[in-house]
Amino acid sequence: MKLFFTIFGTVFLAEMGDKTQIATFLFASKNNINRFYVFLASASALVAASAISVGLGDFLSKFISPQVFKIAGGILFIFLGVLMILGV
Image (cartoon, rainbow, N blue to C red; front, side, top):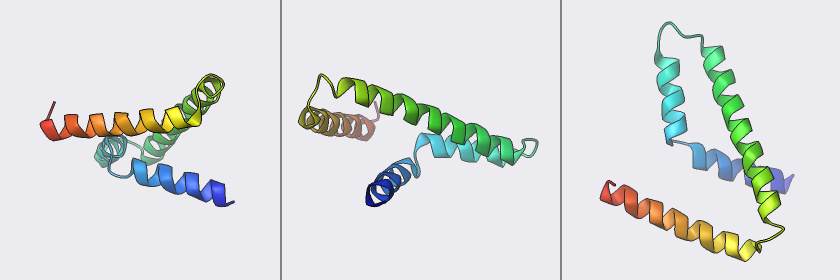
């Protein structure tokens, strides 16, 4: 259960305030849209994206070490952060 809550917490915090949550918020704020469908569609999209990530991570882990993933992920986050700061 510790692993479950670690993954849940990490993904939950990463998703808070991101573009996906803002888009979901905007859809839900429209008067003529059923909120249940907004929830169902956004939750389904997150599940599909997570399934793709798990499958791709599993496949790539057969060829690439976890250390390379950590370094590449860190570099990518720094790069995207710099792009956001620069407004690119």
